[in-house]
Length: 244
Image (cartoon, rainbow, N blue to C red; front, side, top):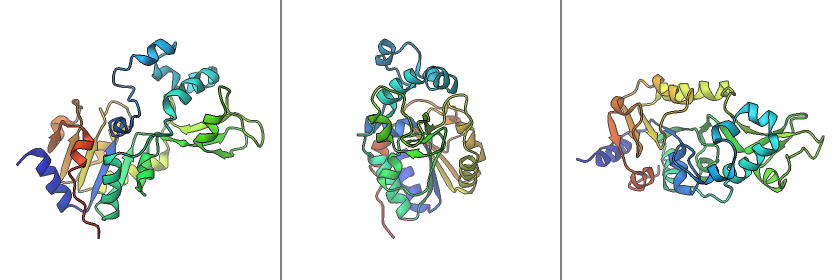
């Protein structure tokens, strides 16, 4: 029996699965992964993405931050792919109890997943730093090349995205720890597990089987009960979901 067949059997037999995903889940929807080699931004930006997407850079060079953010982070035409769709179907069938994501694109919700824990926030939520009014991603996109300002008080708008140097939301962390601690099967997919503290949450898993699906190696490969080095969409497309 191949590893993919074993995986499909596990999914069929379990009704307590938690999925922990990263950028590799969304690359199949055309959203770039900054950890893979992308020569384009090097010619266009004076700083690496990690610098631009830091709290300090946002505070000091807000206009430059937004130039990069609109160009690279607001992929509003992206549509959910097979992985997003299958996870939503598995949740509807009572099998997936939570999706924990490092992505900020909202594609899991668009596909129909209801319990999505967004460790790094979402581009779809933005708020005025002065009065707290909320704005959607379209508002940010339509503010042109300027720094987006609140239409109520004129304050500067900040995306509800966790930048480098910022802490993760405590409630999201606690809920993620709870979900991982209670899971029978933890599927790690499309992530190199290089970003902490998010990657450290996996230490709370005490269940039956740890499954890692990622094209490149991860620090958890040696702990995996099942390791699949295939594109995640290819693996998930083979799941047959029987709705309750």
